[in-house]
Amino acid sequence: MQSSPMILAEEEVRKLLRMEDLIPAMADALRDLSAGAVLQPLRTVLPVSEHGGFLGVMPACGQALGAKLVTFYPENKDVPTHHAMILLFRPETGEPLAVMDGRLITEMRTAAVSAVATKLLARTETKALTILGSGVQARSHLEALRLVREFTEVRVWSPRNAERFAREFKVHAAASAEEAVGGADVIVVATSATTPILRGEWLAPGAHINAVGATRPNWRELDDEVLRQATIYVESREAALKESGDVIAAGKEPIEIGEVIAGKQAGRISADQITLFKSVGVAAEDIAAAELVLKQPPQL
Image 1 (tube, rainbow, N blue to C red):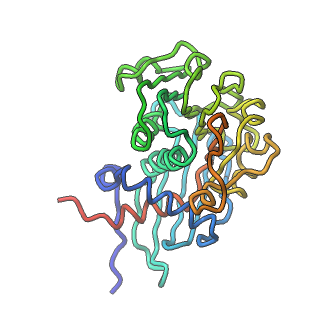
Image 2 (tube, rainbow, N blue to C red):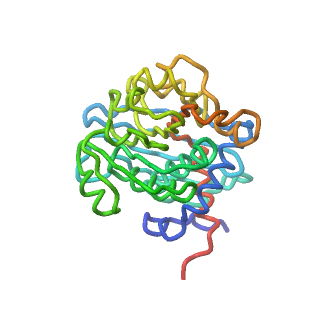
């Protein structure tokens, strides 16, 4: 007799998913994706025009089989901009295994993937981390990046709530994006910007950038000078060239981070090189993260 699928709410996922475990799991998922071991079509995005939102459908099949349904409502104020559900199935029989909240998984896997890229691409000696944005991704990135690099200074800037974020996490709130970015070794761009918010003229030699917003083909968060200077790395070449306005505007072939993990492509090749990891979020990450949750022993 078939058992009922497990149902996990966000708080249950939070108890089971640890960033320390998620970062290596994301590295494995990205390596498998670039190696062709994961079947993953492009995300289908349905505009919910009446309410200014989007519904994304994201299936993947590798070691695990499943799909994420995700909503993105960029104008949300009192509730998160992203909500999601992830469904897992048994690859051998198609039986449903689990339904779990995907909002926290989306938040955490995005930062974990940036941590994978930072570990590979940022200079070994880093001092200053800059975060542009003060929402859930800013929080998650602060946690994840501190696991792969040590920082003596963390600066935050955002149009709203930077002071509150700085007080909560005991970091420095910068007066402007330019002030925040100046001299930074690692930069996170995690805002809801649809026009460029990071300018290449502000970048210090050797900076590494993780850019996780502007995931629509007509949205940008990086100016042309950033794109001109940077060597660009992505999760999926196909997805980034279809979904990222920044990668499309760059007009140059991005490198898949999974190929760097596998040793097939170079990471940083000089101390002054500007490296950019442009993330759009892919189903392989969500399904691997959900499988990791399912494998954890239940909390007593």
